[in-house]
Image (cartoon, rainbow, N blue to C red; front, side, top):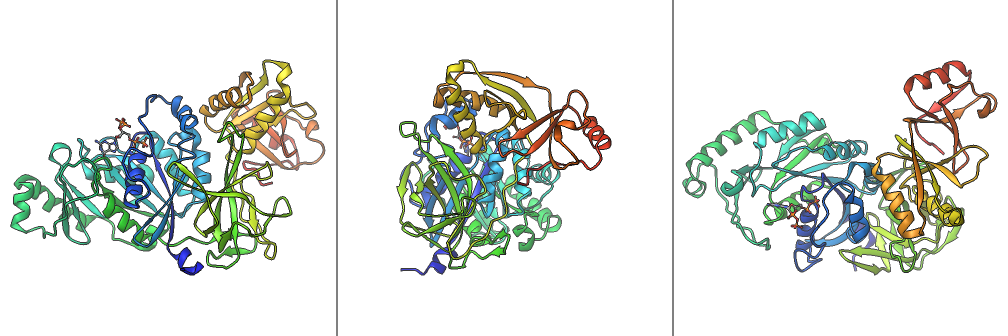
Length: 528
Ligand code: G4P
């Protein structure tokens, strides 16, 4: 049996992001196909029927899908053990994306070749940049009419502020798509439309090989020669250090649906990425190869299985080996414990596991003790991983239950959903929980809240949108929060940990509060 060091060495953990419809699911499915994790294309998910934005989450609900069956998938490929983390495509869930990225060591961005950088790509990408991890680009749907590849490169560079290095270059597109030229191996991978099965024809040919002219025609050949010359002269040098820090994105062209360019992408990706990266803690960096197990919680999902009302905490293992019988230490709860029903997700199946290694993601049954960002270690080695910051909400609403008899379910529902990190809840000081102020980063989260309270907790709510736009935590204050000198439209509230905050309708009011109250220090992040 391979040692734990070998096991960690072969782990690769990445997140996959895209604007909805760019082809993230199709690409994921093809990757799983190579790993033998699924036998048939189409088994990751069925056809989508509702396509508009609101249904983006309903779909998540429908399949719990995006987040569950496909939230973490593991497969083996040529000696590597690969964990793919799916992320929601909608920008309103960028906070969720950020948390998922915390658990990844690199990211793959899928772009539709006919559309280029889209609204959601922009927002999700910004989140990626915060993490300083390698970002790979897969430009998909080359079997359809596509935009000029140089324009696409330029758009990525200008709009996303990252350098690009095309690893391969497309020859034509749509009906004229002939394949790609691998710039480093200097060979052509020719494209024959197929039904998405594994085999792809690969031919090694120099650019000046007469057979190539025959294969792709004179016009495309001329374009290719010119393009390659231009690229070699003008594009960035391939700098691995820049790739590792998310400053330069290796770009691959392909077509996930027809399974073209997926395997070469996977192979290069594996060569360019590293085994699990160290994570920061209050004791310095934690080496993934350290023999002591450690992990942090990056996602919590309640009611995954409605019948059982279960709640799963997802952890990224950061060091060592996990064994299902081992005693672990939950730092925030200050308790020794065993993790209950540790499981890994493989396409559609949940599988109870007996061991896992740094780089892996495990889901454990959570009786309500974990919060996002919590650290789990072994009892003999205690430390805290760097926390996961909470994004400042930008939209607020006053929320209460329509039926006062359902107060208990309402409180339970909003509290649990807030613990998952799907919303943030605030209270007026001294007030009860009959009415809460809900803050979200994207307005779609309000709809999710309403939908989930109704479906999972059987509570109908009243929601009144509020005009606050800015939230600030009070870091320091002289005297009582209730005594602050504030504009009449500024509100003092408390989060559910008891911290005091201020809600403002505009930036000017923030300046007013700071000016009129000596000793008041405000911050945009919740550091507790
Ligand atoms: P997403 O997860 O990023 O939202 O995208 P998804 O993979 O679901 O793909 C969106 C649509 O684009 C799907 O078609 C899919 O078949 C198609 N697609 C993905 N990759 C390619 C490609 O390389 N070439 C072409 N031509 N199409 C591609 P759909 O008809 O909207 O959905 P479905 O009925 O196939 O599920």
